Amino acid sequence: MSTETVTVINNLTGERYELPLRQGTLGPPAVDISSLYQESGLLTYDPGFMSTASCHSSITYIDGEQGILLYRGYPIEQLAAKASFLEVAYLLIYGELPTASELADFEQVIRRHTMLNENLKSFLNGFHYDAHPMAILVGVVGSLSAFYHDSLRINDPRHREISAHRLIAKVPTIAAAAYKHSIGEPIIYPRNDLRYCANLLHMMFATPCEEYRPSLLAERALNLLLILHADHEQNASTSTVRLAASSGANPFACIAAGIASLWGPAHGGANEAVIAMLTEIGRVENIPKYIAKAKDKDDPFRLMGFGHRVYKNYDPRAKILREVCHQVLGELADTNNPLFELAMRLEEIALSDDYFIERRLYPNVDFYSGIIYQALGIPRNMFTVMFAVARTVGWVAHWLEMMSDPNNRIGRPRQIYRGPVKRDYLPISQR
Image (cartoon, rainbow, N blue to C red; front, top):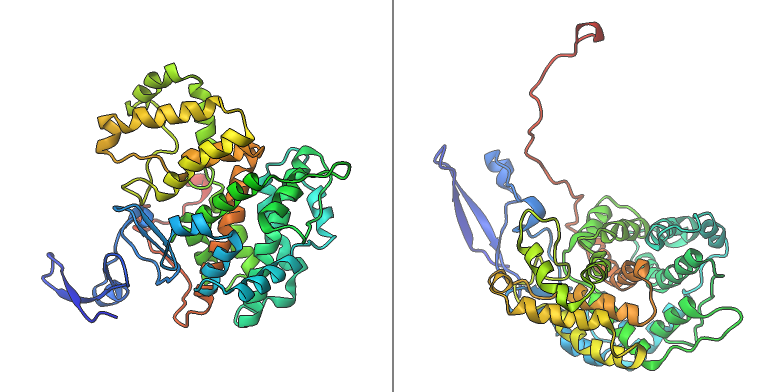
């Protein structure tokens, strides 16, 4: 830990404050302002937390300028090319890639937890027939503490591990059940002889009257998508999980909070918005008109899937997905898929336009993921659900890291108050 300090001078009073400088293994240093209010009576103001490090973490590193994403130090390109999703899950949770025996044991543990309590079926059936699958996912995951309350002592490392395993195993089962409920089909039980991604596809697309065998390409594509979405540092939903966890809430409640945050169209719902945007544009010849609309600050239209809050270079996940798009669409869908052709042309035009180049508005992971999900037969209202399946691993890893931190404190942001000053209550007859 660095012992360097920075000096802050209050220009109004001339007072000086020495603040520690905290340096991680990678990335810019952070000024530790935790004592500033106590010493000076001053707060800091940072809307959207653009310049605020909220915690120490050893899980994921992003260099937005260079377009780098590392899971526990491993480049996302290597993991996407070589690893299984459960291998990455083990890495994020335990900090190291598993040996062959460790991975086999981990896979077996996850298989043992894929089933849901049968009483949850009654809960699922209580949702309206056309409920959005994300609404079902939030509700059912939040209810898990009522069904699996035997391991909820958050100060017990073994209880934390069991809850982590249950979440990774059961969220895909819940996701598939939410989909089945939304289309009026019976829930399909998990098959523990199938790999993680194949099992998820089976639960989504099999029926009691017809066997479903996912193609190896579909399984590999889903495996890749889950890896790319598994974690992404202190994003909105992960920060939500951490804030909920700081109060001592049970892990199922914390992950449900993360799912609710992920649902927003500016976060996990962005790939749905990309498909909606491409559908609205409709044809390649309409692209110039929509590019002009995107540049017009008075026009509400926005190009979805371009730019990123952190990346100021090409999103490395988008680079990987762009290549996979060709392969997946070539085998699983019509090779003349109009949405993919439209997306490729839109990318080409946008990246040659000075407006987008100057603002570094490169395609992000959402630009391609929705197209691949659609090619796999996954409907648009399930895109964010699939994102949640993947990100559950990252949320769980952050929750475990936070729970083992002896310096963990309840989150309590401050504010700049802009309401009325003190005033006296008047009887209703005098107002």
